[in-house]
Amino acid sequence: MRSYSQDLSGGLENVPVLIENSVPKEALSYFQYVPENVQGPGCDLDPNAVTLPGCSCRVQSCFPERCPCLRFGQTYDSRACLNQHPQDATYSRPVFECNAFCSCGESCQTRVVQNGVCVRLGVFSTADRGLGVEALERLPCGRFVCEYAGEVIGIDEARRRQLSQTPLHMNYIIAVQEHKGLDRVTQTFVDPVNLGNVGRFINHSCQPNLIMLPVRVHSVLPRLALFANRDIECYEELTFDYSGGQNSSAETAKLDEETHVGADGEEIPQKKVCRCGASNCSGFLPLDMSILH
Ligand SMILES: C[S@@+](CC[C@H](N)C(=O)[O-])C[C@H]1O[C@@H](n2cnc3c(N)ncnc32)[C@H](O)[C@@H]1O
Image (cartoon, rainbow, N blue to C red; front, top):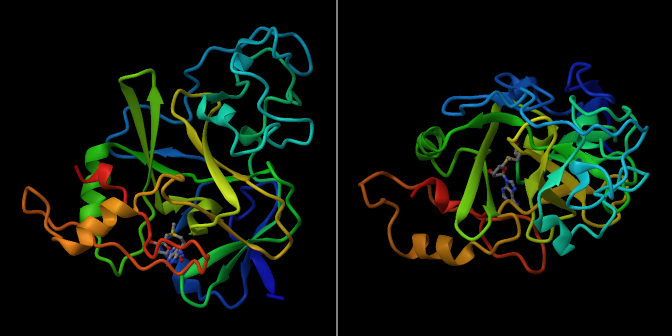
C-alpha cells in the first residue's frame, strides 16, 4: 500500500486529492491546480460563463417529463451514478445538467459533475508511465470520478502545442468531437499540462475502467467528465481510453510506416509505445490526427 499525505488540490476540491509521498516535488513544480476548465488561447468563450438557459422547475429535483434540461432523459440515479450502463447508446446523445439559472434545488439529481470531485483519489508514481491516479475507495459502475479539466484552447493553439512536442514529452491535449446532426461536428480541445486538475494524471489503457463523456453544465462548452465504466476496487489504477473508444491505430500505424513530416513540411509527433499491459493493447497510444490536419 502506498503512503500519501499532501493535498494536490490545495483545498480546492471537496475531498483532498492525495499525492504519494515518494513523488518528487519537481515533478509538479510547473503545474497549477484548477478544479474547472479555464479559458485558454483561441477559445472565444469563458468556460465558466453561464450561457445556457435554466429550467423553471420549482422542485427539489427535476422530473424528466417536465424539465427541458432532461429532454434527452434522466442521466443520473439517486447515488449520482449514470443511470444506464456507461457503454449504453443513450450517452451518444448530449448530456445536460441543471445550471445556475435553473429554479430547482441544489440537491437536484441532475447536478453531479458541477459538484466536483467527491471520491478519494491518489496520485502516485507508476513504474513506467510517469505519474498515475488510483482510487482510494471502491467506486460503483457509473460513478462520476472527476473531470479532465484544464485550459480550453482553439484548434490552431492545439496544433501549435502538439507540433512543439517530441515523443519524449508527455501529451495532455484531449480533443473531443461531437456530431450534431448529419454534417455538424463540434470540437473541444482541453490542455491541462500547466493548469489542470487530477484528471490530467490519469493514464491511457486499451481496456480502461473509466469512460469520458462531454457534459454541459452552465455553458455550451462541454466539460469532459470521467465516470467508472465498471465497479472499481480500492487501490485500482484509474484509466481511460485516450481515443474515446474509436480505434485510431490504423492512422497511427500509417504514420509510423511512412513519414513523420506533414504535408506542409511540419514535424508530426511520433506515436508512443503503450504500456497499459491490457491483453487487447493496440501497442501505441492514440494520436489524434484531427488536431494536425
Ligand atoms: C495525460 S498524461 C497522463 C499522466 C502522466 N503519466 C504524468 O506523469 O503526468 C499522458 C501521458 O502519460 C503517458 N502515458 C499515459 N498512458 C500511458 C500508457 N498506457 N503507456 C505509456 N505511457 C502512457 C504518456 O507519456 C502520455 O503522453
